[in-house]
Image 1 (cartoon, helix red, strand yellow):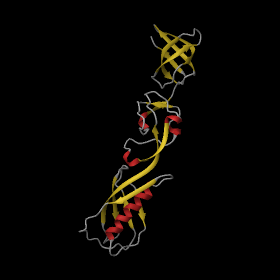
Image 2 (tube, one colour):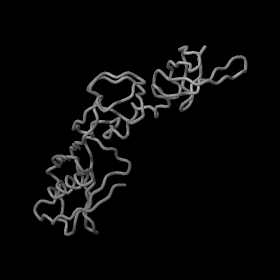
Image 3 (cartoon, one colour):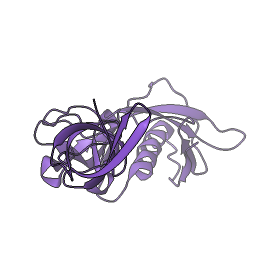
Image 4 (cartoon, one colour):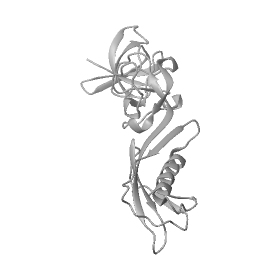
Length: 221
């Protein structure tokens, strides 16, 4: 559970406003990271609330397991025997730099630096996550097609590319229980299970194959 204390002077006349300010500042502190911009705006509280001024610092927390969302309910507490607890709704925006696809890409394509650009987006609205560092993309291919302008998500990235175009590979052929191995050159890139074309290093013949492991492909009938 996220928990924290935010030292705020007790506002004798406006404890509800003190609770709103505490909730806003606590969220800003929780989600502030280098290069991020956090905007938090507490909602209006019921004017009929009768809260006693809090003589000590207010505490703030989120319910355990709460995901980052555009609307957060922050629990603000005034400690002590005569204290109180209040749930404060807060509209939250967390702007961070994320990678965005600049041209249509197909399933199985690798993602190069010129395929993406960095843009500031409100990540509270990116429920499927996001990728912000090209280091997370290196050597991986897309598990699905993506349109230009789409935010690159972790789920859209497949495993590391097992074979790259131009790689020397072991070409395995199986027939009637007999296995024959030869060297070849991959003419495409792909993860395990991907189909690609391979040039047999001995005969020069180009055949269809399936990637079975890093540096190894299986000839298809």
